[in-house]
Amino acid sequence: MSRGIDYLFKGLEALLVVLLAAMAIMVFGNVVLRYGFNSGILVSEELARYFFVWLTFIGAVVTFRENAHLGVETLVQRFGPRGRLLCMILSDAIIFMCMAAFFWGTWKQYPINASMTSPVIGIRMNWIYGIGFFTSVGIGLMVGLRLVRALAGRITEAELRAFAGERTEAAVVRERAE
Image (cartoon, rainbow, N blue to C red; front, side, top):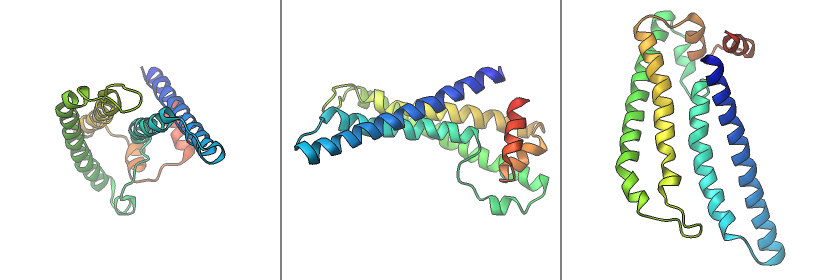
């Protein structure tokens, strides 16, 4: 199971690389065409914008799994294990509520986006903004599972250290191998 999830996230990381490379190529190509040949490709402008949206939201899920989001680690590091656990539970509860609100907002916006099409490519806008479902469910599942484990007392010391920003690369490799 864990290995399958690792492969899923490796696939997401590869997708991020592809999206970033395609976005850079499209933007660079349009700059060259615009300033060198006084022309451009409209499709590449629109696709680059949509790739940026997808890159951002998929990247949010990947970085959440790696505990790489911004945090107030200098404060959390000052606490002992109980204080860190309390901070983890509080922040996870807030994140879970935010993901629920994000899912609900995407759900309410979905019919509106489904009725609109992009100006150049002509695809339905729910293909662009529907990525909110992926992000809210992805982060929501991860934080929900961690919250349940924290409330059940099944959070390891290594996870608390990682939450406080004390994790080393060697620890990351060891945790993934387990």
